Length: 253
Ligand code: SAH
Image 1 (cartoon, rainbow, N blue to C red):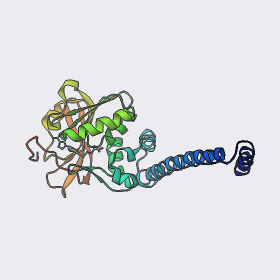
Image 2: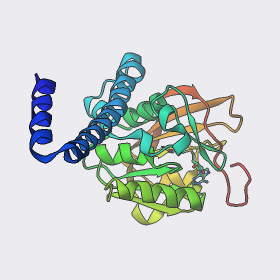
Image 3: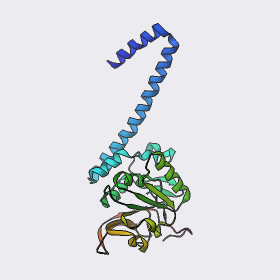
Image 4: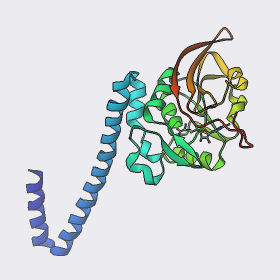
């Protein structure tokens, strides 16, 4: 129906205004259609990712799933990986670092029980994707990244996408970000050999921390901690592989 009426309009335009104007109109319609298709294509992949990689593996928090449907992961990966942005594996983001597999990002996000009023600290900004997901679900997000170039790139991407509530600094995340403590949740995306004391100190009462622990990348555990009455309790854990937490001198913690 629609294409028949478009054809009729074309005929009228050609009859009244000639071939040149008709050609212009065709170019305009084609460019609209190709933009629309590209958008739908990425959105389609994103929705499939949520369905096949997250929901089917047990991620069930509706707000978390909605955030993953919304945040355009392909904007956070390197241009050469745009087509792989919604695949079920981690991707390189340069400087020897990686953006985690979507399921791991979702698992960690769900584990902190995100809430609109929460103040969250992330250690290891990387691409800024996890920070964007956190920003969709909580209040203020503070994120510390050791590599200045990554911090700068992530800040630019988040700024372009309008995430004003994400604050990024370049620094050593082992020390946390004491100026804004205490945090309702701390999410660490690089692995130290032990849980950093400054991060424990910066947890709010009833706050949670999720952190991969273990120096050997083949033998790490994702640990979930909760602070109640000033004491820490381990809630759950999972075997994982994260990049190591580094000192500013280039050694591992
Ligand atoms: N959360 C990121 C993935 C981060 S990969 C994302 O969504 O893309 C882990 C990051 O931790 C890397 O960018 C690495 O540079 C950073 N990192 C390593 N040691 C660190 C430290 N001591 N302090 C802060 N960031 C650190």
